[in-house]
Amino acid sequence: MDNKSHRKNKLDKSRIPNLPLPGEEEIRELAGEASFQRGWQYFRNGAVLDPAVYGWELRARCAGSRYEPYNVRVVFGEGGIAAASCTCPRGGFCKHIVALLLTCLHQPDSIRSYPPLKEILADLSKEQLVTLVESLVDREPALLSAIQAAAALVPGKRIDEGIVNREARRAVASEDPDMAAVTLRGMLKDAGRLSGVGEWEEAGAVYQAVLDALTEGYDDLLLQMDEEGELAAVAGEAVKGLRSCLSAGQPAPAVRRSWLASLLEAVLREIDLGGIGFAGPAEKVLLEHATEEEWAFLEERVRTALEESGDGSWRQEKLVGLLVNWREVHGRQEEAAALVRELGTPEQKVFLLIAEGKVEQAVELAKKELGHLPGVMIRVADELISAGAGPQAAALLESQVRGDNPHWGYLEWLAAYHQKHGDPVVSLACRRKLFFAQPTVKGYVKLRKAAVSLGVWEAARQEVLSTLEKDGRFGVLVDIALEEKDVARALELLPRVEVWNRQNYLLKVAGAAKDNHPEEALKLYRDLAEEAIGRRKRTSYQEAAGYLKKVRALHERLGTGEAWNRYITGLRSKYARYPALLEELAARGL
Image (cartoon, rainbow, N blue to C red):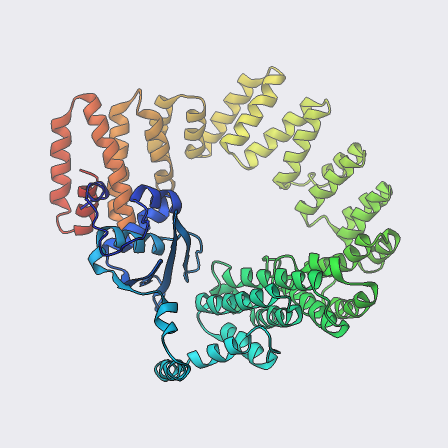
């Protein structure tokens, strides 16, 4: 049964009283089309496990891509959904939440109803609660550490930092980043409750424990496991928590130093990882809050790390940048410049020389030290332009294009520069050299613009087309024909495109041909559909069904409905043993 037929059902919500459940269209709007469709598949495949409602709260487990099902939760308010969460790495209104809501809409009899958890527990005595907790720990021993950590974070009493640190490290050491993120976010929530009642040092200790555990444990292996960056995001949340404690609280000097040291270690871990966004604004918080006295002891750690970094390395650049940034934030510009001269990478020294107006020295140093880094050289040229040294910038990059195989970025930069500064002949020469080095339709358009301005386009165009044909670059020729709206030429060239590359052009040419060459477009869409079927995946069957809908539409437009009926009947017969394909065809009325 497809989505449309479900929408016509009269929903029985008697099993889920009082909940303001959204309809399908509202769920689709909240989740987005892609998540809605995936959630529909999860619902249809029975992935939602043990759905239950507790007052205004809906909970379930949902089988996903990992061994353990994800925990899904939806909380309702008077106006509809107030909050929704899932332990999957995607975050947001995910497909698992969609699947749970669709289960409520279409299978209300599967939902068990209970009083809210607070009501269930409210009538129990202290002894009964203790017995209940002991029983739960007997069933699930892993709960013990979570209970210890939660008990250590009760507002109004001094927290046991040892327990908190162990719980954070235990979570990071687990082999499930998703569940680690859930545990650590629970700790951050506890820290938020502590800060909410003004217990800033206790809250800061929890934020610090989470950040330290992630900083110590976030190695290359965990980076690979943390595919969605969920744990790195948790580290950023811990940093923001420490910032609030530094800003609003009045921690003892030793506590401040400890927090700042943890922030610095997070910054160093981010540098070691190559700048992936670990720990969010940790450097900014350091620069905001470290006093001169505090920075002195932090700088010792940075300088030690500098001694271990390679000369001219990205790591060296970032560490020097950290030392420089603190001085600049505190108005010590001359000290910052002196640091770059002493410890900076060649790149940093070149940019400093430009800022100081020492253009010739900057150019010479760039030629000597940075010629193997085209991206950096282009940034140097841009900086020279900003400093009013355009001719020197052009000369710098022209010195790099004298060989047989110049970097395309240099040619692109020089072409744009000379076009803007009144030397279109040089600009055209750069465009020509660039196009033949890397023929693309985008480069063709830029070459055409430069040649038209000089009145030499026809000759240049013939050279381009004949050279591309001679070199067998038929894919580029197809792109050019489509750009020039010559669909007949594109259809003529398509069979000559390399077999390994032809599939990339079928859809583009079919789309361009459907208005004025419908018979040719029809054949191309059929080829696309059968190629997709050959990949034998549900997603490729869905793709094939989309192409076949275009085939049917073209047959209808051409008045050849009988030919369509024969084709689709033959296709169904040919693939009669492909039930997933037949399901997708049926779902789209094919």
